[in-house]
Amino acid sequence: MQVTVKDLELLKEDLKRLETVGRKAILAELSHMREEEPHFAENGAYIHQLNLLHALEVQIDSLHNSIMSAEIVENACCVNVVGVGTLLEVVDEDGEVIKLEVVSDGLSKPLEWKVSMSSPIVKACLETKENGTFEVVTSMGVTVYKLQKIDYKR
Image: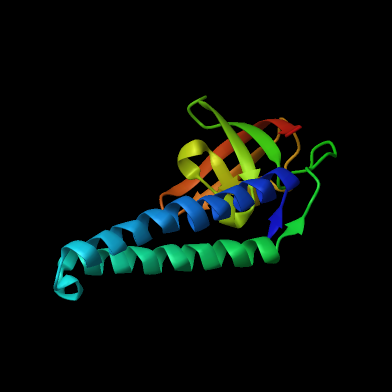
């Protein structure tokens, strides 16, 4: 997975938070249940906490693997080059301006307009220069965008 130095630090912070705060909270709740409930293993809430712990451990393992396999890339710094760390300003067919940040696949957050390199909109604009247009094909049809600006995270 390609990441910027900043994104790698965010992954490491997230991993540390899950390994300490997240894990500690679940283990404390499980310990409390063992002390308070004589038949804790039959308790639905206890089983739920065990499932949460398992899901947390899977998430920790996934983050750890992402960090270990991360390939550090410099922010795209060349004119008209879209890559990890690129800030895009696109205009849709209705004239609405959309500001996107291109991130690694594992770091996308569409609700925050952080889109991955493998997203349809980024793939579609890879060969587009500033002020050029490109089409995004989805199950909803074809949408034409104008790539108004390419900038780079500093």
